[in-house]
Image (cartoon, rainbow, N blue to C red; front, side):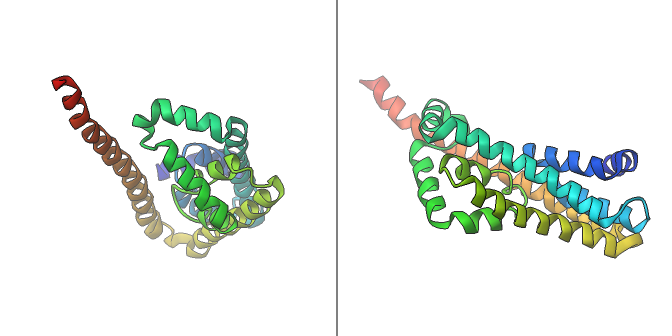
Amino acid sequence: MDQWIRDFLKQFGAPGVGVLMLVENVFPPIPSEIMMPRAGYSVSQGQTSFFAVVLAGSVGSFAGAMLWYYLARWIGKDRLARLIDGHGAWLTITPHDLDRVDDWFNRWGPFAVLGCRLIPGVRTFISIPAGFSDMPIGKFSFLTAIGTVAWTALLAGVGWWLRDNYGDLAGPLGWVSSIVVAGLFLWWLVRVIQQRLSRQPSSQVGGQD
């Protein structure tokens, strides 16, 4: 993936950074932990400026966060609860889980939005409870912008600082991101299996009656 990202950024420059960061926020398995350091490395090679890279990456990431926020706000908690009630077996959550997330977000919302923007695999999904909990758009935008700029600047700065040693970082970062995504998938799979097993006894009892 690193090779593909390098070729893409070489062809499209800073605007390409924005596009990739937008896609990363819509489809989390494309990791910013690889993209932004690679963009920072391109700065060290004189291919673009640090400001352009951070600005483009932040705009793309911010746009992706806002997309999920408005989608969750448009659907609303009640409609989302009905969706979960009908398809919870595959979503591995229940309406009660949704209530718990809502209560948690109402308590920690500002800290959650700011902090989760720095966590791989989670930064995308924190926009959803923010949306259905009706967090004011101004507050959400402000906190998201701070977290987004901090994250993109940090990753780009690391790639710029390492310069020709960037290759020593690309591999470990790729593995970390892959482990996080694999961990989330494994957690989802375990939840699906647990739900299936929990329903078996009741089904067997119903069959005996």
